[in-house]
Image (tube, rainbow, N blue to C red; front, side):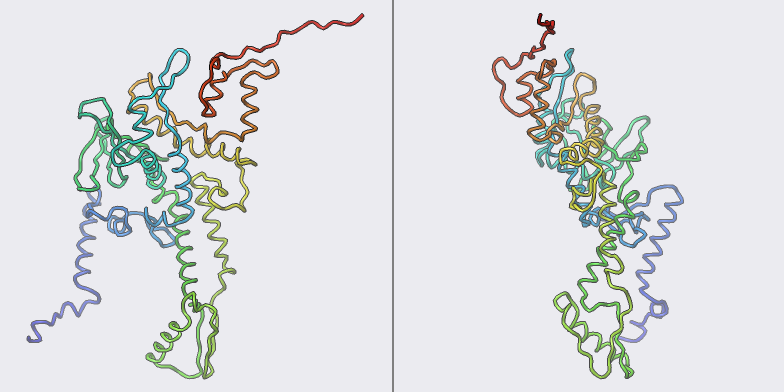
Length: 435
């Protein structure tokens, strides 16, 4: 082989890889042309949600602190995982009751839709997994999607629900209605659905198509800083040789000697297992620190603050994810804190789920679905009994609950004669004065 056959003057005259540079230039040109046209930059399949996807599409997953905040990196943060697990775990444990409105108020009914919402929405998952996935999607991506499966394309009969990953769904306007392009997560096939065939629960900042993604907007900087702090701490403790110092020697070392000394030092003293082995220097060597200790830099306090900040973002009291040294304004007892968590954190998500189910599944005011939060709002046994005494009519007060209604609240079977409202109001008597 001659020199002219393998030597490429253009390649060696340009620093770096000629092939990679040409590929990057082509992608940047395509991106600029598509952006100027006002369209969304096309992406290759299989990279949605990754840091590479965000870099190629000009996304905003990179935080100011450096790390990219994506679905996977966010769940690697202990506070994020704990908050999402807590909220989704609470929601999946709640039964969904279906009621029919009547002249006397409402009557609770059980039908096929009740079974789908409480036991098995589709053959591939249980109801608990279904609600957990929808809550997880809402809290991470700002939207929760689920297909409404019907007996036939034109049938009103609902046969199941199938959750969809938010990154595989693209909402679009179709006149005064919405259409949804859903990509099958197994085959990659894209299918279009009308809004009546999709449950769509958006998060805060809904613009008519999608809610704001916490990963790209509200919590991006807080999560990014938490990732950076975790990475810094991990690198610090995994490198017991402390990279923030310099070793000086009286004699000058050439590059080969410096490399050999550095490799020998890292092999002997680096790592957690070698963190406390004393270093021995000969020939007049000296070690000088270049930076502060992690305690002085308040690394631990920074990580605690980020945990509290993430808990505040999701509306979770810090003590419920392990920060027991923090005070809370949610009440003084477990009962008050649990009730406040249901009222101020869970309710805002539950109402969205309920309203979306009611308008897509019932199409009218006759029936409606509602999450039952009574189990989470129950007080302790003594407090409940005190409330039941008042409800049954204590000390001449009018009763407003029957015995069987009370037993039902405690998951007890009814008893004979327990459906009659107690009537124990005492009639006032005239006082007599002794002669």
